[in-house]
Image (tube, rainbow, N blue to C red; front, side):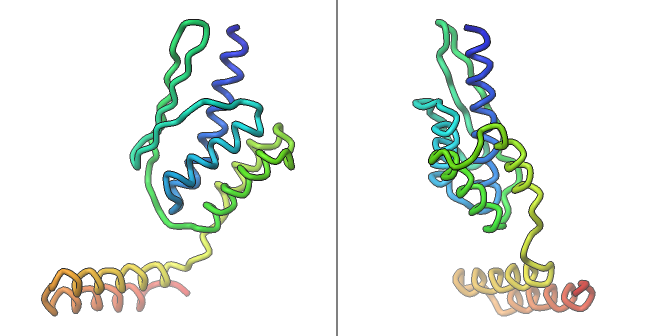
Length: 161
């Protein structure tokens, strides 16, 4: 019974690793939950529900009359849709039996190490544009927009290509 609980906890940890990649890189909680369930399905574990929030995820499991609770912090949330889509695709491949369950951990590490497809300049430009839009939406004053433009110009001038 103890080894079965250990295998289930290991499967949950693997599924959470992949699902957390989704949410940490711009995916929604529903997409992360679907990825989590797909990985568990590929590992032949079903019916283990996770409770998702933007700051943590908790999984409770009843085994042998005892409750085991696994809680993981989501951590920093960014935007890397390549990583998020690769993690979702890995979950779908696992659920369809297209990937060896022994190689899931190495695939998760590969996805985690993918570089961002966006340069620093693009990220700063997107942040500046977003700042300008929020300033306009909130009926902000022109100085806020000019401040965003100044930050963009300063960073754009000194940012490497």
